[in-house]
Structure formats: structure tokens, C-alpha cells
Amino acid sequence: MPRAALPALLLPLLGLAAAAVAGADMVSIHNEEENAFILETLKKQWKGPDDILLGMFFDTDDASFKWFDKSNMTFDKWTDQEDGEDLVDTCAFLHTKTGEWKKGNCEISSVEGTLCKAAIPYEKKYLSDNHILISALVIASTVILTVLGAIVWFLYKRNLDSGFTTVFSTAPQSPYNDDCVLVVAEENEYAVQFD
Image (cartoon, one colour):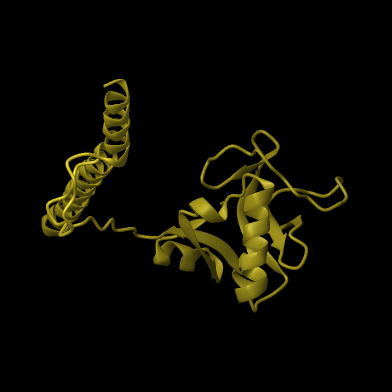
């Protein structure tokens, strides 16, 4: 159960009967991240015994450990234990200090405790139609004001570069700019010289 996508709430419960009453399932662990998350959660919240029952049992039919929820056994974290022991009525326990798993008798689970998971109800909250309409109006207004501001700026710069006076100017201006006046004055000097 990675932290970002945790779909269940861990519930350390006493005994299998309590797990059934609470509507929770015994936990199954499928990778190191899930094991580490469970261990960190237990270190912060669990005040019970050091070993807590996982949702795993030894199936004597095919001589292998299986999860109660029938999910595939893709990960394990067994401590070093002797293999010569009788595995009938054997379950897996998580050591709450180390995160390692060990084999133990399923019958003592009511004393030790059981680690379960339960779905957390999640209710999606959507924006109401009024919020969507208001958001759309704000966005449209912003776009329109931006476009109008760009048009006004473009017209202002075009008028500034072309030499036309603006409507708001109060200073009288000659119809000629300085270059034209200079050229006209030079032409008049040459005309006088040749006469």
C-alpha cells in the first residue's frame, strides 16, 4: 500500500471475530513499500504485543503459504527459522519492531492481535453548476480584457510611430516634421542661388 494510493485503513484488531464484525479484511502485503508503510504505521499507533497476525496461512494441500484474500504471494520477509517444524495450523506474524515475518500458531491469534484493512469511503465533490459558470465567466472576461488591452496598445504604438498626433494632445504641431522643414528650407536656398 503506497502512501499516495492507500485505499485502505489499517485496523489492528483483537481476534478474527472482531475483524468480521468491523467489516475489515485481514491484510496482505505484496511489496517492500507496503511492508514498510504498515511497519511505520504500527510503530506510531500500535501499543500491543510485538507480533501481530497477518492475513496469511499455511495451506497443507499444496504445502505453501497463501493470503486469506486469495491474492498472489509476490513478496515475503521471513526471518530465519528452522524448516523442520510442523506447519499444520501455521499462520504468519509480523514483528512490529523489525517488520520481519515469522511462522506461528494460528490458535494464539486472539491473544496476539490481527492486522486488518478496511476500505475508506471516498466521496467525490464536484463543483456545482454555479461555480462552473462563474469560473467560465471569469476566464472569458480575462481573455476579453487581455485582447482589448493588446488592441489599444497596438493602436497607441502605431500612432506613435507614424507621427500622427493623438486626440488628447493639446500642443499645436506643424503639419511637417523637422526633416521635411529642413528639406524645404534647403530647396529654397538653392532656388535663390540660381536666380
